[in-house]
Amino acid sequence: MTLTVREDGRASLTQFQQGLSGLAYHIGPSQLVDFEWRVGGVNLGLEMGSLVFVRSHTIEKTVDIEFTGGLCIRDATLRIYSSPEQVDFLVYTDLHKVQIRVPKKNIHAKGFKYSATVSRRHRYTDSVDSGLLHARILQSLGRGEGIALYEDGERIWSKEETPRGLPFIKQGESLERNMQTLQVVEKGFNIRFRRFKLTGDDIDTAAELSYILQMKTRVSKAFKGYVDAVVEDPSKLPESQDQDVVVHQQLDTTYTLLGWKLRIEYEAAHVLKQARYKRRGKDKTAYRITSATRELHTLYGPEQATSVAEAGKPEPIQRLDKIEMETLHGDESE
Image (cartoon, rainbow, N blue to C red):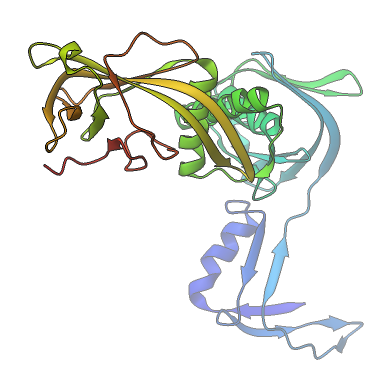
């Protein structure tokens, strides 16, 4: 087989041959000048629009991978690709792919340098457990933990430590927090999430539900809105402004999360720090309440402190700082 490529494509082809680029190389029609394929001296006369070259692995094994931090990946497929300049280690599980590229000159050094990528083999996350595994792989690589490979129970290779990768740690910690939040929701509703892709809205909804289910206090220090409340006994309001005011609510809300409709009844007490309030219209019990410090604490759970103001019947909400309910608004209009 003989081929001719354009001058501007030869450098990248040489890099591929030396193992300095990826495991596959594509030559498109614009780069392919001439192509000839002969078998037994006979030109087959094939017309080729483009070509893809794929490097062949030299070793393939089924291994267990153990990190010194305790994480173990069992029955993974290990493929090793060798070239004049680089060695590529690819580890495949059913759901993940880890690729580590090491310069040959550094492969036996104690603190060898490498580049690594960790990716899912599918566009979705199969389950919360697989998402947690992905997060922990990232963190183990990022912390520079030692690695040992086992084949049929026998250790075939190990490294006491590997280079640290701070971006992996941050990505792993963020992903782990999100998966742990989903675990709280799964446990609270006795469900399991399958084959999902998390969006920013999903993360916010899951966080809201986890606060409710765990009866935690949520703090917003950038609350720019206001609460419209009905105060049955205005005499119970603080005599002076800039004191805390609590608005109490009974909520029955249905959330949509990763294909599930999740209904929950709960109590919420919204504490506006250094509250400022004024009457709305002629109704002596209608008040608009804001926070001088833009600080809103929301307490969830079946039992809350006695409130000094009672909210009306709100529409279901997803986030407290959005205009989603009758009594809590995202922007002050008066």
